Image 1: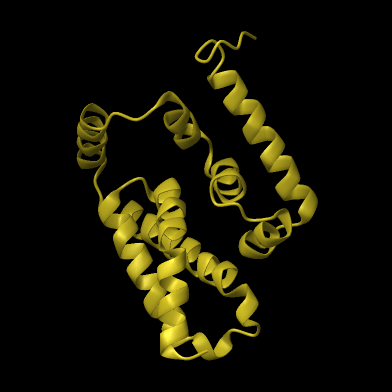
Image 2: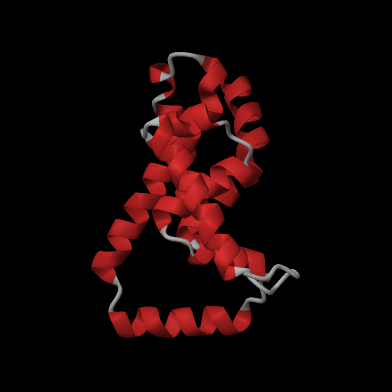
Length: 161
């Protein structure tokens, strides 16, 4: 894969990468940092890509690793008081739909497979490769995430328990 093909594929996957990063990090600046770092690492390690057909899956895995790295580094740096104040101002400023809020409230283990499958359109097999999980684990997490969302959204869209 040459630079031109790399650039074209990254631009094609940009929106998808943003959605995945946003579902993990929630902060736009962190999402931009994670995407930038993931693209840089992918370009540097392009020679390790075995099959160009799986470029988006490979890049998504790198992005998830970058997001997790940012989360780990933030845990070490941000005092609780600052985090709490930031969380309060974000909730007041942003107006998201009930569905988006419900998805973002899901546990990390359920939210990532849900976003990859339902928002980004990855197959279960691709999600298994990205998250390095078994197929049954991915299916179980998707089932549980649907169940949790159904409970959270009860009554919101005419659905009653």
